[in-house]
Image (tube, rainbow, N blue to C red):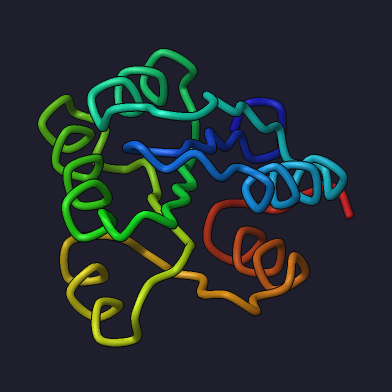
Amino acid sequence: MASGRPRILVAKPGLDGHDRGIKVVARALRDAGVEVIYTGLHQTPDQIAAAAIQEDVDAVGLSCLSGAHMTLYPRVVELLSEQGAGDIVVFGGGIIPEADIAPLEEAGIKKIFTPGATTHEIIDWVNSNVGSTTT
C-alpha cells in the first residue's frame, strides 16, 4: 500500500459469465479511493494469483455466481500461499449458500459477501481489513 490507499485486484474465476455485480463493486471501491484492477471474465485461479503477485496488490476480491466457489476460491488462497504471497487478503462474493461460508473462511477466505450486501458494507469491510481509503 505504498500509495497510502489499498490496491485490490477483482476477478471472475471459472466459467461464470455474469460480471455486472463485480463491475458495480469495482466502481464503488474506486470511487471510495481504492486502486482497483479488474482482470475480466473466465480467469483461472493460476491467472488470478499470478496477476495479484505481479500487480503487488493488498487484496483479491473474487466473484462467482456459477456455484464453483468451493473449488475456485480456496485454490486462489493456496496458490498465493505457495508463491509466498499468503499475506494478500482474499475476499469474495456471489451466490454462496450460508452453509458454504464457514468452510470458505476456514480455507482462508477472509470475508464472503452474499446477495444483498451493499457497496457501503464492502467498502467499510475493506477499510477495516485491507487499509484505509481516502473517503
